[in-house]
Image 1 (cartoon, rainbow, N blue to C red):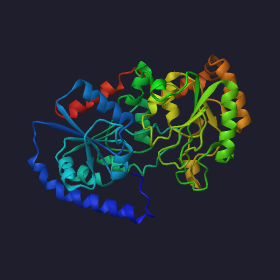
Image 2 (cartoon, helix red, strand yellow):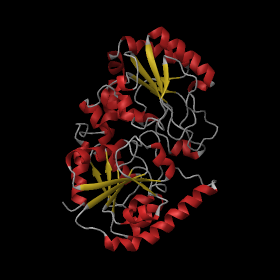
Image 3 (spheres, rainbow, N blue to C red):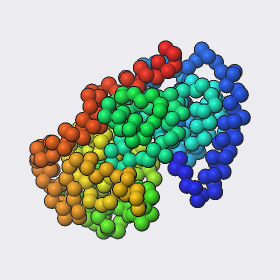
Image 4 (cartoon, helix red, strand yellow):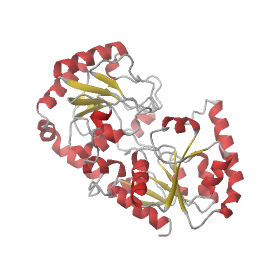
Length: 385
């Protein structure tokens, strides 16, 4: 849940959830210590989903739940397999207060009271590598109440220590969400979503963040203009285009054609399965480029400022980690995409030095398809096993 401080309803949700947490805390003494319980909070995709799926497959002794506010429970309805808990239900929050470990991937919100006032162990797995759009130390102070923070590489561990100045234990585990990409685990994705057997280009712009004047659509085009250009391009190249709007974006496309599919994160939260069928990725500042990086397929960046205003544009953006081609307009898009569709190896030859450098920062030696296994081993240690 992204908190909007100008929205009174959001404050009501937080106040009610905080009240239920305080009421629930005394019930912790009645928990069943023989059953180990893990609660996943906020989003059930990415690293959290990878760990939950691994536990479902290999360890039936751990009881798991997915906890969220109602809006996010609705987003993931039918898209994840764990029993759900509602932040606005007292009975559910008593169950949360009796858990052993809570795994988060984006903020703790009012759950922070449980981290501060109980012995529940909190773990953070984050939701996207912060290598293009940094957070600020102030925003991440809540992580100092956590037991552990799991990061993707030793270099990222140093980044968390030096930039964010966190005091919690930081463990270099790798990035569980990319294991299935590395291991080639996704099967029949095109068939499942009725995507034709063609080269797939994914266009995935990020959201506005703190720049309200920012357009959710690329190239400064209106929706009709963008659809017209993309449609003609897909026809001329015999390719298929997926337009993937961010979960916090209003920029989904309407009236798409047989050559274009709008597959926003809200409706299709499993990013990795769509990346598995993507041949070329186009974005501006989205962190999913670092997930895609493990596949060594072409990435194209759109030349637009990071989604910040004022001093944040300088402090929170990291343009040097845009590791491949940067384009200015749709004409450049057409030219370079056609080039890489014809010869994908040209991409690696052209950008090999920067790709190697960024891979080392993002993953080091952890891009081995076993990061989720390392998550599980850390979790078992926290559970006392």
